[in-house]
Image (cartoon, rainbow, N blue to C red; front, side, top):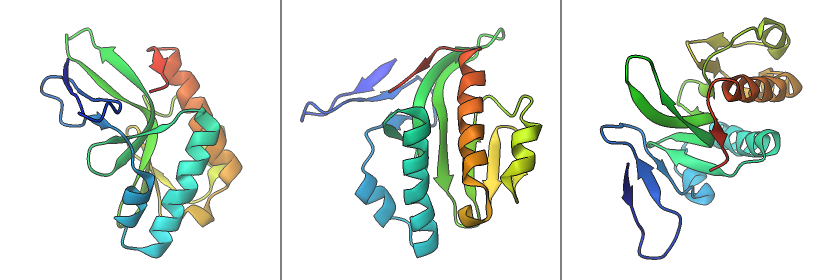
Length: 157
């Protein structure tokens, strides 16, 4: 694993050889300022609070627009290995992407309470945060993190 050290002594960013998405220190003010849409910016600010409260972890920047809470290292039987955020989100222009890794297991009951959404393999897409049940979203984040922890060690940084 290669590391980029900062001269200031701040936490270092980590990068697995060949990885496209790397973890780096998070700058809340800078992250929020970069979101042009004021509604999306407010939603991102709320999600930062929700994820921090549910996970108990500090945010880390993953790639250009993803915010992760916790991380895990994985290695598949094929030999493919890497490191990823444990859970998090990205405030995209059209939708909020919420990352529930490694997927949605048996979360149908929680998703039924959530409100309007669509799902991908390990992404939950929300048009607007104010249209979903925040309690269900919190339950989903926790359930996803707990499910991930049964497969891989989840670390707080």
